[in-house]
Length: 239
Ligand code: PXP
Image 1 (cartoon, helix red, strand yellow):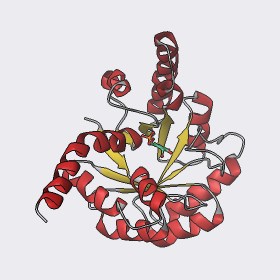
Image 2: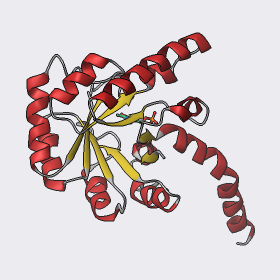
Image 3: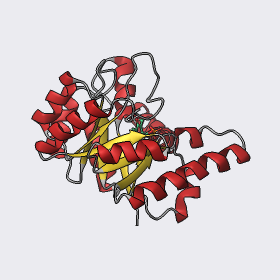
């Protein structure tokens, strides 16, 4: 049975919109765990646009399941990871201008660099996952770098605007899962998965974990909105 790991970056994005202290991604992580999530993910970006070091360090102390720190394979952030020691690190490509992570790592092109970073993190007892496109060559390269897990980028599938395109992109994911299974890698998947498109994965039993953030926050805003308004009405009507 697959696990759900919840990405709380988008809660921090709402906080940062006002530059204040709510909503707190740390509290959201606790609620996600109470609801049954088996992992919490946060991405400490170089520009700190949502999650900051305070969040990461408190999450390290409060997460009871498994803390997965997403990060770029750059020295400054590697040092922080070695200090904080999340249970798992997921290395992702990072561009300053992007709205969110846009694609998988090119592990083949920079295999020496990734091998070094994977080795440093694993040396500190941290499991390492590499976020890659559903491409057997990249999976092979991730394996050669010593990764424990590959997270298969589902963004191209999620963004498919027609059924034939979705079928084609999903086919790439199925092949990638087969390649990773043969290499005995742990397999997770994520990016752009929502309450509709995730259903297609029901028979892909080799995927152990789904990493989902945006659609959960979007759903929470909608299904929690009425209750939040009622609570405020209750207050102002009872002045
Ligand atoms: N996996 C990785 C590597 C990501 O960068 C993200 C986005 O933060 C996700 C999964 C989750 O994607 P989404 O927020 O679209 O569910």
